[in-house]
Each structure stands twice: as structure tokens, then as C-alpha cells.
Image (cartoon, rainbow, N blue to C red; front, side):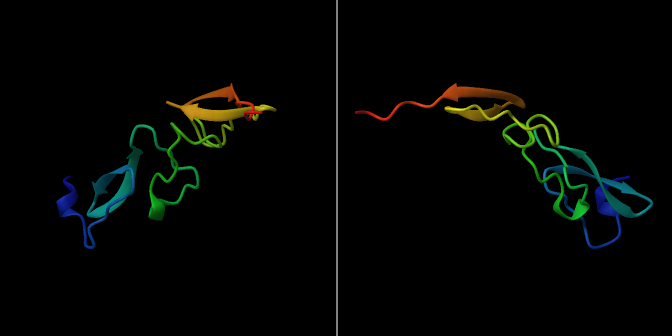
Length: 88
């Protein structure tokens, strides 16, 4: 059923598909690179899991902190690089 046939108000979920079933809107799958970590429909898929170091690739997947380094999450994968020493 198309979203336009759902009961008003028309629903829109952040970074997620909208599914209409029996005249009621529900949140569908998250857009690529996003996750619904708090399981609340009102804010949709709130985490950009392809770039969030606390939810890298999936909810709760923290990138390890490295002493003297900088953790990052790119395309859902953790990595780290060394900090540059300040100039003397």
C-alpha cells in the first residue's frame, strides 16, 4: 500500500523508509549508513553508524581508543592514526 493511503498525519521517519499497512504508518528499514540504536520510531534512524566511533557499523560497536592516537569510523569500519607531535 502506498504511503499516501495511510491515516493522517502523514508520517516521515528520519533516515528510514516508511511502510504503510492497514492505513497505519510504521518505520521501515534504515537508510544505508544509519542505525536505530535507541529503538524509538519518533527520531527514526538517529545514528550515522558509518561514521560514529561509538556505534561504528552497528549499534554499540565502539572503536577502540588508542593512546597517542585518534580513533575514527569510516564506512562502518574502525581505524586509528597517530597524533602529530606539536612543533618544537
